[in-house]
Length: 378
Image (tube, rainbow, N blue to C red):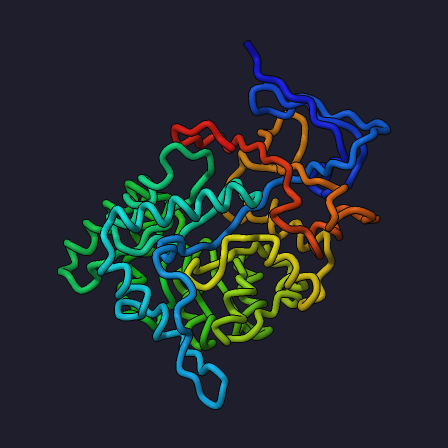
């Protein structure tokens, strides 16, 4: 027996995210039909979010003190919070029981599902055990997780270090490294070499707190760069020439005080830009909040913002099986109430979702990533 649903509403369809009135037919998790016709429904059928950069282990440490208070203002120090191996989050992770980390991660995964996210990429600290913790937290969920592990024992003998990376890559989709100023460059060079040898992703933070680690990161020929807050036009030209995508994290960069990424210039250089919520200890996994900042503070076109937070995340992460609302694609859609007190009276559904959409506008979420973790979905 087939499982079939017919959903009426304004459909934000295709790669151009153009709204049409009509309905979609979803059979066994696949979009079988899209029909354009006049309908009597305020629903909005939109592609789900893809959160392209998280540190979900931070779920055990929420809203820490960001720094010291001086004259009623907080002096923020990013290194004290997140720099390995002795940043606050690393100390907390090292002192927290495995089952507590798994439970906290699982709660954040459920939060993503409830707020319209169907896939995410996580920079997984803690070596092999960190990857195992995420695998355990994913059980009985229906979400695609790109696990980008990180070696823990960087000061061990070379053979031991190589063995750890190999073990991580057998349990992950690639490596997700901190900035090149955090550790010896040889650590990054060997990590990149082994990842490429295993045909796995190599992603790295760059230009978050200072600019001088950007050329070093590019020398590693990464698959994905994270942040680039301090990048100048020369950096962006080099990144564009190398065709390396960037994931930006506006709320995170704002709260840590490192500045605002030059996203408009990235787009002018034809760089593929996706969006992530970064550290759960500082921000929720709510992608609606990222969109509002990108639209209202950065002044980026609303359709471009929605693209960056949905379809572009799939492209950057290589998730070819998670795409736009088109016939034959897997159904990964959120159904929003266009008649909610918040959205009622809107003129442009894409702009309204981007500028004012909230999780409580979601009526339901249909997820079929093709990577079910023994779960039944939402």
